[in-house]
Image (cartoon, rainbow, N blue to C red; front, side, top):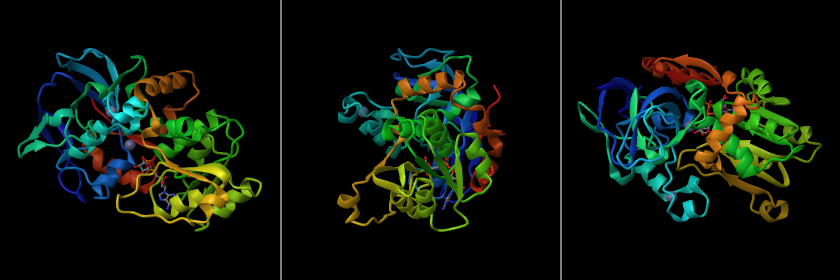
Length: 369
Ligand code: APR
Ligand code: ZN
Ligand code: ZN
């Protein structure tokens, strides 16, 4: 038995309850969680905006210590410190072979089915089986994940900071590094300065971008955004027009790159509008599946902008997670000040309330060992 945070239905609080866990299957790993980040994607699920099979144990941004491995597991062993990856890519599908494991077909199937690869379910409670969530389900003292869903890290790195590399840091870092490929001196605008947006900002700084224009509807985010590298801040609560101030700050041209890190129609459209001709707008924010956005058709040829998305930062977790942690150890990426709040598992609903109030950079659930 162990404790976990279960979502039974949309628009309800999470229930922190006793659940049982089967031993790991042949290619699965049992992880004792140390820390799990509170990411807005889980809130989308709790709101019913992202449909996943329920009831499920939420949490997809975590780090912990391997307790046991299945008999066919070769890449990790008990005692290893690991970060969980919510894209347990198969290595064999078209996209994996193309070098795009972020688009792995098997990983999408796992996400939609609420199981582990092969339709396995290892989680149960009094009312029957519980769904896995994004192959991670890490709002739990223990979890079983696919071998491909863990990345071994240097054990000297604090697991509280490492947890955030499971989603927010890798997503932001990869969007700048892989999707946009920002170069020194490029101008960057970032709409949404939460856990993910702050990592877009700090990676843009690492890439040498200037200016870095942070935009958020919560004026409290200005201090944090500037700490992470923003050169300017636009308070979106003061005006509906986000495009004009960005054009004014970029010599009347528009930004080379914009990143939308919220998942709303108005801000996605603004992200497209604020880049210069032949510039690139990257949508990271996850909108509800039914949401449509609209763009002027003539602008596609006449302005030749690139409008694209970035899912998990287009990353290869086994390469990018250690790389990001090495940059952290060198003092070039700031993970310490990203965590502004720690919670116990039974405070998880409060953690989401504070995420929505916008008072936190990133909140982290910490598990006692
Ligand atoms: N205009 C400007 N800023 C806004 C608006 C808006 N209309 N709505 C929300 N924001 C700001 C919030 O004030 C907050 O600072 O967006 C930020 C969102 O941050 P978090 O809640 O910390 O969310 P985060 O975990 O960073 O995720 C952001 O990326 O991966 C996706 O699913 C995730 O769609 C979500 C997005
Ligand atoms: Zn996330
Ligand atoms: Zn694949």
